[in-house]
Length: 124
Length: 157
Image (tube, rainbow over all chains, first blue to last red):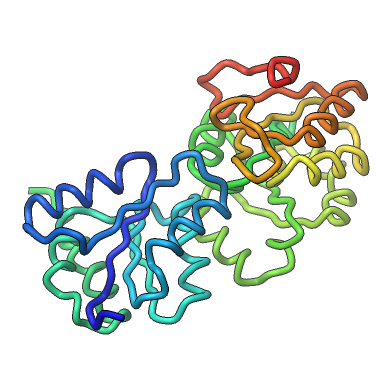
């Protein structure tokens, strides 16, 4: 088991993979974030995909919306597995900050991600 | 026309339901007919969290839904009755008629099911159950969103 938090992005269609790929391209850090799509899956199937990506490790699960199949799958898993926290409204700034702050405890890592993601939403 | 959609969707309350159908049909309430969710405060809180405030989310098991169906149909607001599987919708249809139409909105792969549409997988038993409902007067179609064409049950054979 690694000491660093695992990051799992769960989103509709191809969104999770696109976010992970761009976060890797910008940061140069590969193999840290895992992408999970809800494509073609029912509740149990999506929960299984999220569980496989988390693999029992302390993790922050980033979800696109605070509702729907991705959210429910992540929340179910977080209820069952210690050290798993959920953050909704995933965006690139949130992921990029997370990549450099993975040694935080899960609660703090998730709270920081939520703040950093919110900070990026502005009306210039 | 108070219950405007009876839908089978194993993702239950999600974007296609609350946004795709909810906006189009001007939905005031959703009845989530599911024994597991009904019996769990945690599950109910979770689904409330995922529902827009302008839509009232109600929870029922089969007995509660059977008791309340006539009252829901008499309400001025438009509503959706939502189940996760064919068996629950069929049991509801049998216990609390009438259900004029059933919408298959999302039934995904499980062992024993075969693909009928990209978003509808059915076992032979589920198909036969739906055929029985249709023979009893309920029209069964598959349609994930109101902007896509409804597919008749016969085309899912």
